[in-house]
Image (tube, rainbow, N blue to C red; front, side):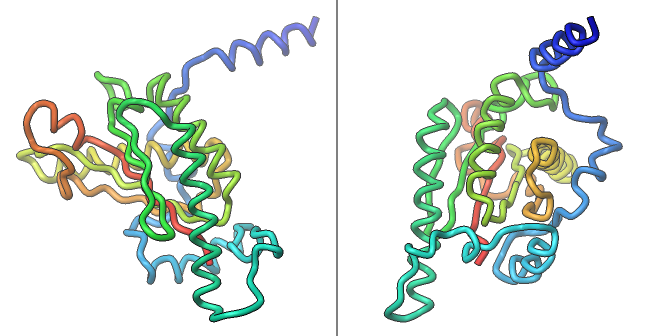
Length: 223
């Protein structure tokens, strides 16, 4: 009887829609994450913390047969990093063929743009059922490519109150960060920022506003 009850409980849990934990607990999940832009300086400072928390570097996960024994070491390392990220880009692209989502690569980094309505409910700041499916697929690939840092940046459309825009964009970014950590992504991989209405990617008309409300995931190799 207990076994049947346990199986039923597991089944019901699997069928329940995802809900973010109480906001007061977000700090527990995001302990170890950095609340700053992910740039070369911040990545360099973060690397020993990440590795000390069990993180992986590119050198530790790339097949040694992929390494080159000739030529300039920096050029070889760049080539290996680019190939690693190309493979991730291709898998993300093939997996995330949905409206409101785009995947592109810039050098050895991959950027995933998630329009807010593609991953969150229309009426409340909560991850939707479709968003849960999308973020779960992204999480699975981030686990498959562990030698990466991830910047989660939230953006809004143009708002009169810049403080409100910043708060909303940060809420979105943190919510996605909490989701990742709940699904076993090492929080020391994360850089979380809210940028408000900065860097619009569309006009500020009714359609463009929906595009500007977004999360951008920028993924970079840990060298």
